[in-house]
Length: 399
Image (cartoon, rainbow, N blue to C red; front, side, top):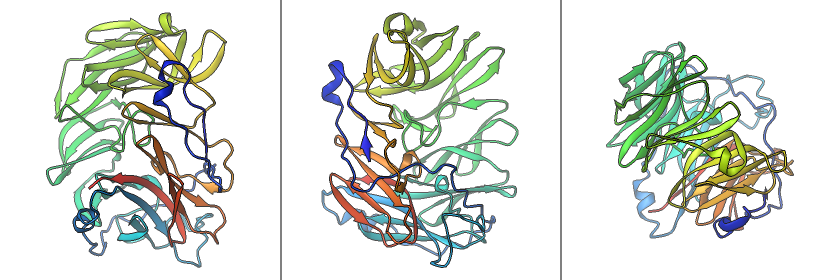
């Protein structure tokens, strides 16, 4: 894995180089589908993680999710499109702690975007025409009628809060499957795997509240709404602009948008023309708390060299990130850009296959050679996993 170069300028101390892997990797293009199982829950009971997580002392645990298939099936071609039974695993270090049956006759899909490691637990998400089901560590924790594409999930107090997109183009905010707020014809900001959003996706916690933001299209712009613990605040209308991101932040409600080729940031009732100061136009960027400040990070067009780049906007300063990273990972006051441009021999199944901690990133990689085991790497330490299949996610758990 080749890292992109560090950020130049005053923030250099905040950027840490990633390590170079002896085995390279690449994004799957086109992505594998892995089909969809039927909506019938037959998952066998799985061990609870509490005892494992409490016995590790103060050591940080590396949690990895994986999908294994029968040895006779060519999972890379996936010719059966979900018609083959498989197993979703959760490993702590090299030790398997969960094994959840997936595939036909279950409510667990083999698709890598169908399960997420959040708060040390493995959450599975499945939907079809018959309904939507959310599982935690192999047990169903929420189920409801109607098909929704879940884009955010936050566990709290023994239940789960979810944000889903409905087939009709609306949004549904739920607690344990019970709808708390339904919004027709709306678009949420954020998703699983977005650069400036964490492992819980478009639903996240801010000031101990569960939050998300959405917009309702209105001509060339739209009305942006911010939701905190199910309560919707007053709308902010952005006329004739392209909305890039909106987020509830500790400093207040913030909106990033583009209007007539100029990037603007709305915060605390004030519209600030960023392009005037930074010399950039943000094209695919988001809002993030970085080094204790509300910042903009992502892709942009730079005016000073008429080129395209990636960087971080801090106040009125633009700090470029050298190279062309595929993903940006944020951890406190650090940004770790990850580039996959030179990786050819492994699969990297999306943003959740990397996770930052203490200035370095852990990576979950799957060799294209089926004779080789998938592995994770963190601070030069490699851990192999005895599965015939792929790794779909990685996270840290600090006991």
